[in-house]
Amino acid sequence: MPERTLFVGARQVVTCAGPARARRGAEMCDAGVRANVAVLVEGEHIVAVDDEAALRRSEASAEIVDCVGGVLAPGFVDSHTHAIFGRARYEEQELRATGVPYMEIARRGGGIHASVRDLRARSEAELFALAEPRLRSLAAHGVTTVEVKSGYGLTLDDELKSLRVIAKLAAALPMRVRATWLGAHEIPLEYRERANGRREYVELLVNEMLPVIAREQLASYADVFCEPGVFTVDESREILEAARASGLQLKLHADELTAGGGAELAGALGALSADHLAAVSDEGIAALASAGTVATLLPGTMLFLGKRDHAPARRMIDAGVSVALATDFNPGTSPTTNFPLVLTLGVSQLHLSVGEAMVAGTVNGAAALGLANRVGQIAPGFSADLALWDLEDVRELPYWYGAGRCRASWARGKPCHVHHLALTFPR
Ligand SMILES: [Zn+2]
Image 1 (cartoon, helix red, strand yellow):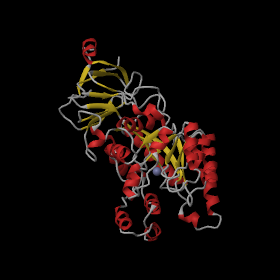
Image 2: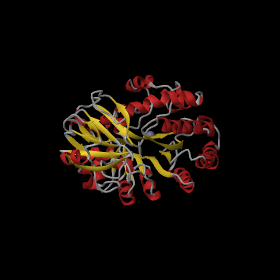
Image 3: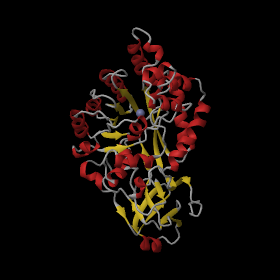
Image 4: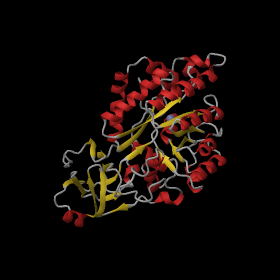
């Protein structure tokens, strides 16, 4: 019989319990905060969330984890990262801040093509060694499920290399790691320079990369950067329809800078999520609401780029859209692994309540990955993915902004991150 572990002594247990699907509209308000309850875990799963005194009596032989008056919450689901990259691009931040335009930064060898050149020159082992501590840092901020995209390779071999690194991370780390193929992140320079290059690259994606990735099961999801100047709506549709026919689930970078029909496309395709959406149109919001496509908002990117036109989160929630929050962790526009900081931005910039922000970072993040039936809630039957916070009230989570208050996190009942040595952990 698998070992049973009883998590006791939490001042609050933020359950996020409810229907096993994305929450929308007023459903997002309730994070299910409970007091005087304990959480019983057996093996990889939560089996009971109940009165602490009663569970202590009935489970006298269970291993005890003392939450020492902290806040126990579902592990966060970071449903949008680009964690497979080589070197950092810190020099661009200062150039941008002092008014150097993006095209000039690119001309000086910066921008996304710098990450592409860099990744192509690195081995799988090197990329793994760089990415592993990044994912551990996410776990240290309470993230127990992370989506990781390829997309800095942009050749068959380099995209496969990136996805194999993600597969190795999934096998090596206790956290749940899910892979997204983002071969359509950008048109590589060598294709941009050719007359018919755009078309040739789309054909490479659909006819050469996708079949190998599907056959080797290297990704669960396909994503496209749909934005004027990158992939058009028609190209995005073609790539995503092919991906769906190959068995991948769909995500889309949509309407980050301009309302170009990306959200409408995500809705029409029934994508799991449309991400960014800072410039989404009213028609786009309506399309997401009626399709049940999760709107994954990435306010860290806006903060880092110094932009103020955040995605209209309130209008989306009022229109019945399910909103998720994620880091967009990447070397160009959001180099942060601090998930609670994203919650802070969700509250202070997107005007979410704390309950909405918690649901956006757990249940709705899980739904953006098609995992809402297993992940994101502290409820019987769900994966034992937990984070313990050195706080007395969940409202402190976005309040102490930028702080590292995660004491420990567990995925599938196994420790992901342990900070507080005074706690007793399952053996
Ligand atoms: Zn992204």
